[in-house]
Structure formats: structure tokens, C-alpha cells
Image (cartoon, rainbow, N blue to C red; front, side, top):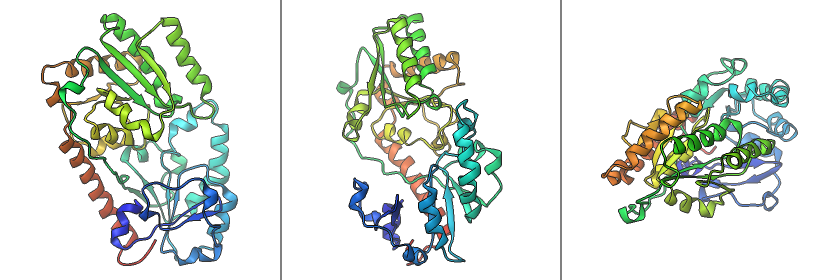
Length: 351
């Protein structure tokens, strides 16, 4: 966002854990560690034209100090980033989440001038207690889609179709039913040597038991064509996508889903669950398969459809082209830029 607004004369600073990183629009990624940032001067709060509060699990001590300095007419917008989704509040271990919302997050929500969702799916999947408290807007996230070289036919696997999933591992991401479906589908269709599934990602804190459950399924099934690769560093993400023929996003819910755009940038076909927000901004394409549900049977049907498309003689044509991925990114960015320009009343001021 900062990179796209910078040419419009907008400077964006990031306040995090008591430190400030100034004018991040000049950067490609935020530097680490945070301790290299200078301490934030609370008195400077009122110099900003707007404040954006992004994501759940904020440190209330730091934020209340900042908001206490907020000017009377200074706009504040809250961006939940999927943190208010019903699915998170329905988990058996959601007591801490509910307490945080009631004691802290609701106060930030009510202090805002509006709530900004990244998709209509995020808005409709948000808990009722957080809806209608403030004006609501849907603005897609900006996208920086890497421009890659065209994948050659010789680079594609001729005998093995590779499915890939790259996500933080938790129940919400749908890895367990995907693995169950993949193992069963491969055996039923005698495809153990013709397909493989590579899984990239570390478990979300508290989801270690979920990952162990996935490992148990693989041990009991004696499956040899599913690889739990573990965390994939940023420097290795490109290679992960290059290995993948069909990128799978089986999440029960995603407020947005940037891996969809990343996959398009590497000409991967897509197998995506229906409640992934970014689908609202992507036109229909023959390489995009929507999973017809969230149970094992539905995922098996989706896997089969995506596989049959992948093995067609014209599989190069059936992959999304670089032009298609860039067209999607450009359309999303144009929509987001117009929305932020209108909302923030951007002229030559700074945010």
C-alpha cells in the first residue's frame, strides 16, 4: 500500500511495539529487527492525516497511548485482516479470542471512523458483534505481482502432476481434509506414481497437534507421494511455485488470499475453496477450479477436475498466462488505489 501511495505524495509510517519505521513506501520489505527503529514520539501522533489500525492481537498499552494523543477530527480506520472471522470464534479453544475482542478489540473498533475489509467474503464472514458498529468498506489489498519468465513446456513435469499448498498450518487452512482426500483419491484412481503433494508451511502457534494429526494420517496410510516440507523461507518461495503445477488453497475461509496471485505469477493452475476473498476479483478461467465444498468428497472431486485439466495435451495453454496474472493484479490495484484516494481524500498530504 505504501509503495503504491508514495507516488501520490503520501508518506506512510509504521508504528509497532513502541518503535516507528518512517516512510516505508521507499522500502520493498520492512527491516528487521524492530530494535533498529527509533522510539516513537507520542507527540507526533496528531501530525498524521489518518491512522490505520491493522490486524488483531494489538498491544493495548502501546495503542491506547497513541490513540490518547489522537486529534478530535483525526480519522482512524480499522482493518481486521480476517481477525474477526466467525470461524476463529467457533473453535473450541477460542476463549482467549473472545475475551480479547470484548475487552480490547471492540474498543478499537468503536473508536474508528470505519472498518475496511479486504473482500466481501471477509465482511460477510465477520462475527455479528463486530458488524454495523461503524461504516464498512471493501478495499482489496494492493498486489505486487512478480513478472516471471514464461514457463516452458520442458520445465513442466511430463509424468507427475505436482499439487502444492503453501500456508501457515492450522485447522482453518484445511490441510487435514486435503491430505485425507489426496491420499484416498490417488489410491482410488491408481495415481500414486502420477501425482504428488508438496506442503510448505509451519504450524501456527497452538496448532502443533493439528500438524501431528496430519503426520499420523500419512504414517498410517503409508503414503509416499505427500511431502511435509516445513517452513519455506521467502528466498525459496519462487522455487516452490516453479515446482508446482496446481496450487491448492483449501482454506475454510480466507479474508483475501495472496498466494492465489503469487501462483498466477508463476503460471500455476489453481484449485481454490469457495470462501477465499480474492476470488471476487478474479475472472473465470479454465485453469481455475473451485472446490465444490469443504469435506473430503468435495476435495476429491476438485482434485480430479484439476488433474484432468492438467494432463490435457494443451496443458501449456490451460495454465494461466503471465498476461492474465498481470491483468488481474493491475485491475485489483486500480480498484484499491481509487478507493483509498477517495476514502483518505488524498491530494498532496501525508498519511
